[in-house]
Image 1 (cartoon, rainbow, N blue to C red):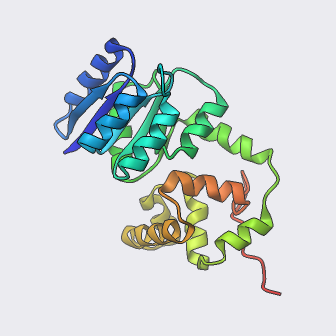
Image 2 (cartoon, rainbow, N blue to C red):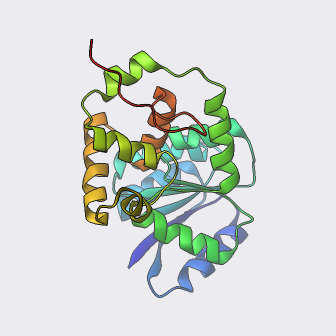
Length: 227
């Protein structure tokens, strides 16, 4: 059973989200909150598996609340829900540790699928968000020196897995591409996160692009040869 907390300052939206969640036998509502402060308290008390977080709320907004929630409840995965199509908000949400970002015009079926995907440890971004993030990174110079310093502890296979993660592939898809088992991929992902000090797959994707390990539209950059 996946426990889901709902955070939104509009009662009507909370009611709609509750109805969607409760329509599924494997999902249950762990509680509701109407602002960021209440969201942090709810996460601390109930430790939900997934939190649906509105971004624009009075007081502490969803981005700041997400950071606090994940600090107090590392088990919880946060999906940001918004009507605001703003690059800065998207990027800040992912930097705060959110595992998903969706617009509120998604269908109930898409939202239910997103909850299950994120609860399983995967990341979930609206297609338009993924495209714009890649375009944003494409405008930045690759930090080659920093990348080699930060990623030198990874094996070649771990770097390969990181490159596939950065393209949004699931563990199963990576396993098919690399001709290994899904369990092996999960092990590699866990080691990548541990070695780089990252919380989850979203942070791994950001790190891969920011460091220049993966170039938007291109292949993962191979390790530099030792001097």
